[in-house]
Length: 115
Length: 115
DNA sequence: CGGGTAGAAAACCAGAAGGTTATGAAACCA
DNA sequence: TGGTTTCATAACCTTCTGGTTTTCTACCCG
Image 1 (cartoon, rainbow over the protein chains, first blue to last red):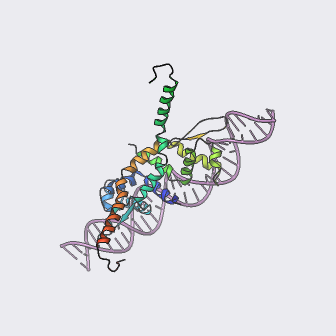
Image 2: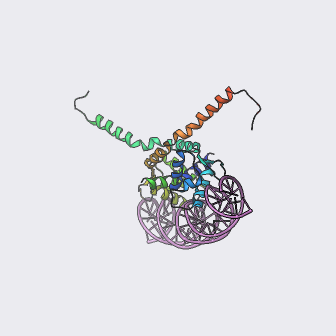
Image 3: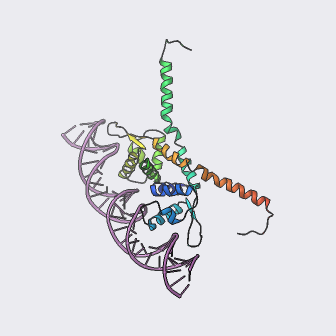
C-alpha cells in the first residue's frame, strides 16, 4: 500500500515551517543555515524538520565541504495530489448543485415563453 | 493566512483511518457506528477521529434521533490541492530529467557502467 | 597547528496524538 | 416504566512532536 507514503507526506506538510522550507527550496538548493535564517528557531530545530522532510522523500541532500545543501524532491507530492483529486467532484459539488437547482427551476417554471 | 487551514487539513489527512473515513463518506452519509464497523478500533477512537475531521471542516454532522449522521465537506481539500499544485512543475521535472537522461545515454556511446 | 564555521547528535522537556476502558446522556422501543 | 441503541465524555496511558541547550564532528583557512 502507498498508505505509508501518504501518511508521511501529509504529516510532513502539516507543519507550516516545513511547508515554508519546501517553498524556499522550490527556488533552488539551500544550505541548512540559509534555510534556518528566516525562522525564530534554533538550528537543530530546523535540522529536525529537514530530517522529517527527508524521511518523507521530499528533500534530498548533497555534500559540499561542511555544507549539506538541500534540494526539493517533489515526487511524493504527486501521490498526495492524486489522492486529493479523487475528491474534486465533491468540492465542486456546490457548482453542480447550483446547476441542478437552476435546471430544476427552469423545468419547473411552466407557462413562460418556452424556447 | 490560510496557514491554519492547511495545518489542520494536512494533519487530518495524515492518518489512514481518517482518510478511509473520508473515502467512505464520499459514498454518502453514514452514522458513527457505520463508520466504525470496518475498523478494529473502539467506537470512542472513531469519535475522536471524527472530531478531528470536523474541526478541520472536512466533516459535518446532522441529527437523526440518536444518530449523528456524518457527511463529507470537501471544500478544505481544495485549498490543499491548490497549495500542492504550486509544485506540479517540480514533480513533472523528474520526467523531463529522465527524458533528458535517456537522450544523453542514447547519444553517448555505451561504455562501461559507472555504477 | 589552531580556530572558526556548518551541521549533526544527544539529552531533556512539555504537550499533543492516538488508543484504551468505563461511564453518561438522549432518544427510541416495549 | 425500564431497557436498548447511539454516541459523547472522562480518565488514563503510551508514544510521537516540536522545541530547547549543549556537545560533538568535520571541514576549511591562516
